[in-house]
Image (cartoon, rainbow, N blue to C red; front, side):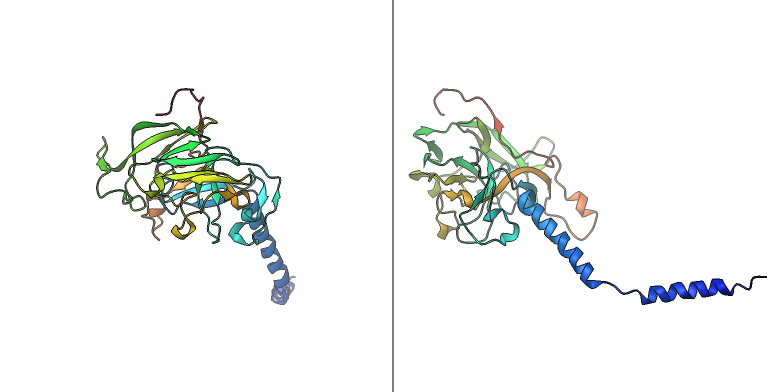
Length: 295
């Protein structure tokens, strides 16, 4: 007849074994380090997320947009390494040159700060800006007036970059919007996109320069509110053409966009999402260029 004692002893032995087990902290730390290195490698060599903090790329990018930036289209260099962990240098692995219209991530020449701008001149090009219009290799880049564009009017997109109430409007559904005038710009390779250029200001004119063989000239799509290659470093600009070693990747698509009302309340994580922006490609459309005169 069983007394049950062996079963009790088995339980006691198992509890003693569990008590005697020790955490292998070295193995735990090693595993964590491997995981962090894998994340860093993915961010540095494949793709990383990017957040839009300013209005310099309106109307195509808004404050609150979250993007995916690919790291491999132009090869790799010091600026490809995420979190600016690598020292600046002139090396490039499997180098390639951006194309007209690409949205790229240039690093500021003196600060470890990522910008986001559009490539408007390639190595060896002559570029000038006159009255807000790009003159590329002596030829004006066409700018066609398009219907005004309705952008969100919310806590992240306040329309404050323009004159007070000048572009605030109500759409046909009764929603308040930021209605901005836009121009369609088309580059020599057929890359076409919208820009905003609604006022006269100092950056509307830029004397002709020749882009060095190892650099590109970049501008923001919001031409009146962008510190880009036209602006001096002292004015928080890029101080001229951007060396290719300072280009850290290419913007690919929008993952999601927030209107600025996100809080600790989990419900707001969904209600603050802007509709119809997730999945938007950031590669410019390509059209066949006409031989007609620029407008």
